Image (cartoon, rainbow, N blue to C red; front, side, top):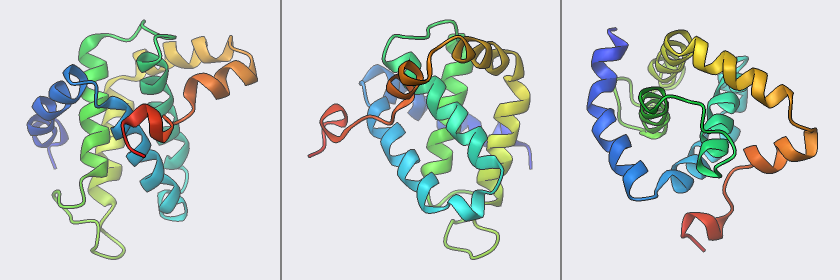
Length: 145
């Protein structure tokens, strides 16, 4: 599967989410889906948490050293992960998350330098600070009650 080509249609939606301030809602939804599929995600779960943490830190204004192109790609990838009806619908037991995992793997490989810089930045934060910065947005921050 050509992940970059398949992800392109999500880039426009991701741009709209960023422009309309909908990133907190996306982050909260992806965090819920990730928690609900923790066993199926396996070791990729930590990578998903890294992507969520980077986006949360950017949204909170704590980390802005990510390029706009990388941020847009990551948001598009998270949107793809959240969408249940993508290349392989999530309800297909056993294989429904394979395409989502492929997109996450592509993001990690493509933006490795950006993610390494974020990892270095987060290592310099105290655990309490990092927990606050990377916490999924609360319901009031997403506009939901």
